[in-house]
Image (tube, rainbow, N blue to C red; front, side, top):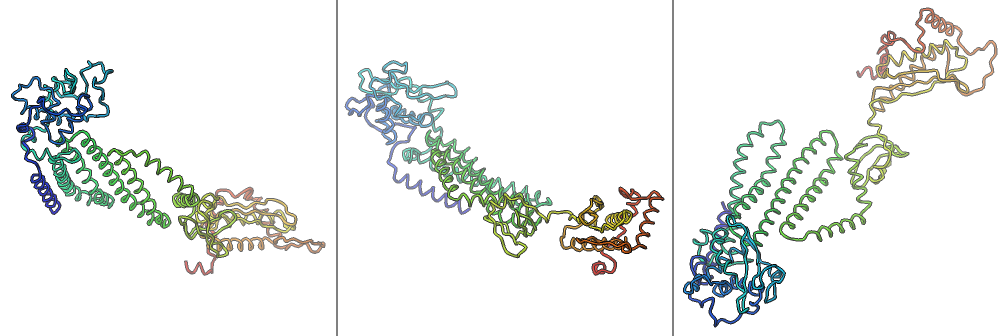
Length: 588
């Protein structure tokens, strides 16, 4: 792979440069530091501050970082080491102790005493100072202590601590790596990370990526045939879009597992641990972002199938907002795990968000109003509705306003924040349309005539194929100023208002025929003077209507207060619609 070749070439170049520029020092853990002076040599100059615990530890650490282990051995109490072996053993023990401290205790110099007598409140003798404690696998807790020289001129790591260095290094040291690699790999360091550890981080990163790619590729070979057999393409999209974040998450896990073999110093290991946690959050956020893509595609297809074009238009905004929120949370989590204080950042974002919300309050209100209209959908594009005191057809639901075409054919733009708070009456959602009218018959109408009219209109409503018989009623409701009032109430089986107007017209014409056939007529506002010879009624038709009502009464079929179930069943769907001879009937 090209990436592998590039990384390998880069590592080889770094290794060559490191070995060429390294000073010829002995191997770090397999021998001494040459023929330098004895760590107990009295002729060495006094190091400033070495008569205090803080100064002694600081000078020891600086000497180790500069690979001056002969100078560092000066701060070890080598009383138990034979004098002849101190020149060789002292630097080696100083280096091993530095490795142990790097792996277990990050010494806080500011916490160490600057008093030549050491801390006086630690329940230790005046010539003893506790540097730190570490837990061992077998020996329990081990204390790293310093001891002041009898003459008070210098503080050294105590004799008991020096005696435990070999055992501590056997547990916390580099192991076989320290014996196999040349000294240059340990002597060259950057940010307190040694050269071999930098190379190890790069190698582990490449190996983790390659291993994760192999594992994910094998998983795809197994899963692709399985998801291909499913009826939906959701699992195919999910598998395709989540491959990269899953591979990244697996690579982070493998890198974190392998990085434990590098024996990084405590602060470096803490940084790497935080970085690994942050990258894990990034992987999770990446996976969620890809899941948002899959979910968005599913919702978009459903909206298009249902004809909700306005909702489709707002999906990109919702999708981007969700992605930005996820990435922002992942970034904050990553920064926090690396060691940054994100409290100030979050506070700044909160103040900035508050200022932005106050400055764009109306815009935000309209935005959320538009989202609520799209999600709740009290009205849709193309619906005829009443809003407030006006009516019109909704033409567009935008992010700021809703545009409605009024009956005057003007285009009215209403801010979403206002439109969403109105009482919206959606006429397009009616399953049926109400038919309601009040008939006013002349006062000359007799009771039996009125009964005949009521019966025939009821028969019409029950029998009409476009009128819902439940409820369908016609009642004599009262005496008007100049008419006998009949109230007709029913529901027409249609949602199309234009079709309703045609059915309403048909019903009104048929009712007019019934009124005419009864021998009476419609009342109208007037003052009438009646003569004996002018009753205002058709005598022959009046007698026919009265005879019919009398027959109903004699036969026990008087349809008041209503027709019986048998009669209603006989009348059901007996009135043709459209009427015979109409153009609608010919098209049907």
